[in-house]
Image 1 (tube, rainbow, N blue to C red):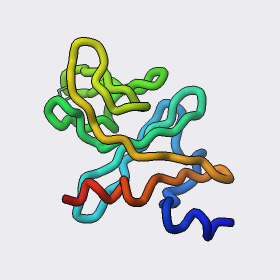
Image 2: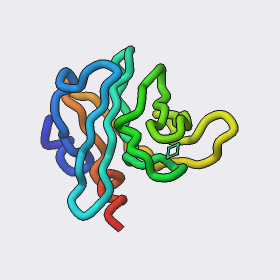
Image 3: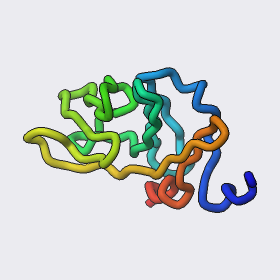
Image 4: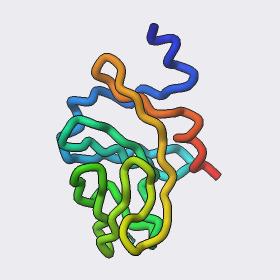
Length: 116
Ligand code: FES
């Protein structure tokens, strides 16, 4: 079964190493870092680690519900869509995530798209 996940998905480690309401970054060689977020109710989301405003590191932001607040100027970004919320406009690319057997998998192709 794990073989079926190898092509499309990248295994990035166990969910329980990611604290609730926490985030970690995943460096992409030659590309842009990816931020992985864990919400209070156990959901995991992956976004490019760059705020759509001025590239603030979203992984340093505060997670609440399914949003993260950028640490630089407090824009709120949807973890589900990457869209800026409220009156702010902008969008950061999201990367598909799935949990399998307690491990986090992210979409390989989407994760590597930041390598332009
Ligand atoms: S860089 Fe994120 S709000 Fe300005």
